[in-house]
Image (cartoon, rainbow over all chains, first blue to last red; front, side, top):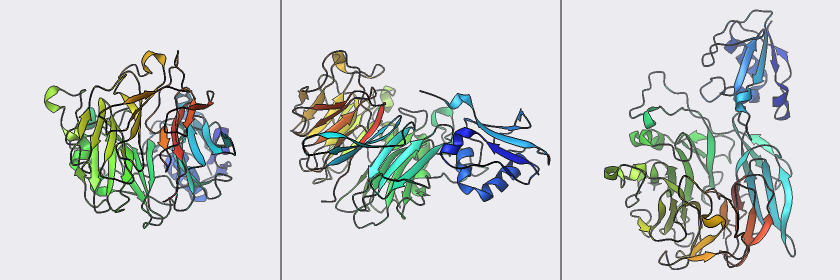
Length: 91
Length: 373
């Protein structure tokens, strides 16, 4: 089963422990993760369900290409890293 | 007199209280986080703070113990954009995203509307909660009005609602200010809206469009509590006043040192008395001559006094944002804060000011805890 890991920076706002979550696409895996941690959803996805502008997701070290529909494929052994983009940092 | 006010800053929320002899910072919350707005609901005492985390989006928190502890509550959420949606008139050639960018206004409903809170946002959605902020619903009549899609960004890339005035005589009667989209009025609790910015002038538009109500950039709209048909606006290119409930607006001209600014406060009992914090228009945006001043009129805008006592008069480059000036329910105590982290208070209507700090983070908003009275 794929594993989802979250940036340390999110942990001071809410607990997002690494967890295994089922799915064959980025969205399926994330939605299954959010089903156990609903509050995390709005920290990662915007109102339209798109990846937030200054967030990034890597699958096995490769950044996803589809930030809106989240269709990038995931294997059973994949690790999804949800991280911040440096582009969002300011002041 | 109010004994407490909240200061929302780029690096957290500061609560300032009056002790026996002086005002001082009594508490801090969310240190390090971008706190964009705060509101203490006089009906419940609940304090609301909005955060913009940048990476993680816009969040709202509520405290039911005067800031000792906070609970994250639901932030307004835009509905799913229909797949076949095509903007009728794209804003500045670029469609508005249906996604919360900033909470720009937060106002309690009337005393007879328990749990009702209004929330103005970027990119232009007005939200309403009926359960004290636990959940929010987009006001569709305003959002679906085709004229809403003509709104332009002003002070931000996308348009936004920054002012909400609930009429103390009738809670169903609400006015909102939009940058840039003028002033809108509902008299039926948001079921229908009327564009009420006739008389405003937008110098930044081509000559033939300068008086169009829907292009106006009111930086802030405030209404006199005792006489709600009198409204004041600090507009992008001047000061405007309405004496007929926003049906018409008159420009106040020849204001020195400048009619440009963002903030305005009106006396809660005297509709002719209002305060402004002028600065050089409009690309430069710092106090004229490097001197921080407050302009006060006591005669409905016919004349202004420029108040300086206690304010820095040399090499001060403080800009005061639209929500960073507030007045308490007596009309005597005002506080304002600046982009360079200075915070001032007066207890005599602005005749003299006291600096409470010159070292806070950039200040977005100042908000008194007021009573219902």
